[in-house]
Length: 185
Image 1 (cartoon, rainbow, N blue to C red):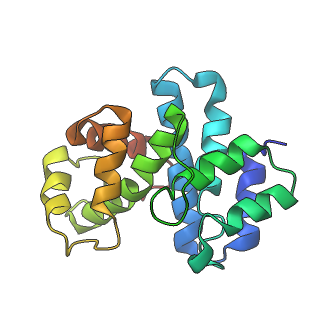
Image 2: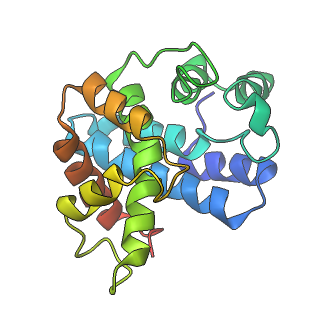
């Protein structure tokens, strides 16, 4: 079974109560939907969004088993193995050895951490918005390891490389995706 984005969000709420994780799931889901359309996978946009929403399903309750416990939960609920693999792959090299193989999985790997960094940069701006955010502003903060220290720059860089993009391209596309999200303030 492949959950719809609405069903995915209901499941996310079952395992996450904090506003941060719920909002992050929505934002990553929205970005994944945008990327699906931009990269020629428009007919799979709901699937991509579902994967984005569910990627951190286990993080709030099981941070030490992140990307491991979610596989168990999803399999128990009969969720399609493609969703299980895709969501687990964003923890590649960190908590699991499930490598991103499909372009969709590489996008998730790359944008998960980057959406957090971009969001943190946007909040620091006078407008507090991604609408007027430029790549150079994000790159400046990307270099400052103390800023949004929880956002793993190596993962972002590896994600760009997996996709065959330079960092500027990844940042630019992710900003555009976040501008389209109704869940970004």
